Length: 526
Picture (cartoon, rainbow, N blue to C red):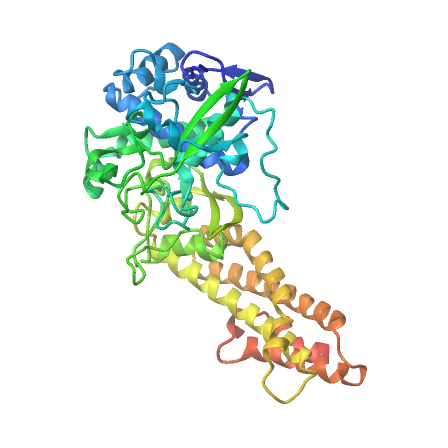
């Protein structure tokens, strides 16, 4: 029932704004033809899961048929044959059906059991597709769960793909994917693309993966003729059934949970079964995911860090991936496949033990000169030098603001500020950091565009001076709004000014980056 290869189950919006229902081969045809602008049923946190699924599936279908070189087929019948060839052992197309009543046969993203006797394992009911999802909410407050009571087939399709290719550890007998460094990690996307257009992004990633398949194949020890669609293999959830990386295709589509959908009176629901262990051996995420940076330095247990950390996708984390030896670039973070201007696309879910830290996404426009400087593996020395200097100078100005507010909070006392007094500065420093983050890459590229050191220094000095003025404004707002005894307010304000400007003009400050008007700040305020 509900055949993805032949039935129009997936909604997409066209360039004209119309919503079309299509089978999976027609979706591929429309992606190649540039007709799709969005998938209405796709939730924001499901974007990378669906994009990666389409690219991996398309790459394996084209490679297996020997069509590694463009142009890509744009006919739905061609794609139907390519996809069906991946499951040629199943003449009835069961692996592409959303609902298959025989549990010993595969269904879409739902592995079969070895015998019908395993039906007793599936005893946990899933009534709506959002119950399958990777989101974990606190007390049902921020995002209500199990509300998609009138779900359509594509709601279930997107939920299945997201669960099976993005989920982590969720307690005993619920194990996560192999493309994640740890059970509480995340499968993030951090890649370069020539366009943010959905179809153009798909075609770019498809082309790069076909061209660079051998790189992942050789580097990670995957199999040239390995298993491609893990949902077609029988799985009873036993430890002895775990698969090794040497058995898998470089772009294998995995599954991590035993799920079966059923339909009664036209309403689809699901059933879950536990598993004794993960489906694939634990390789700590070192399996060649083409979208996700991998940490080079593991902790004491040998586990690389999760890419999306507490700093999310801010400017420091983005620069760190390009410059730090702690991270290995993914295959698609390669500027050599982009001929003009491009974009850095970062997407990911921040996960933790029994909670979700939110979905985060950032798109950064990059000019051609910057892309050239980023290179394929190592960035240009000028990019490294300018980036690190700007980060250090921004940190110095934030420290100055923090010291200034802490001095005010102490009432101007001649002593070291307490932890509580220093904590008063946090929201104001966060505002300043957000201001830096919002324009950091545009400002950085303005400097990199200049040819001479003198011109670059002029742009940097103006940037730093503007940031100092922003910090000075925030300091004034803080001293006007924070509580302070009236008798001490003048003394506290003077102490705040001295701490602020003293830090900027001191030996660890940035006096060479300030204009004369900024250097006179304390005298002007006096």
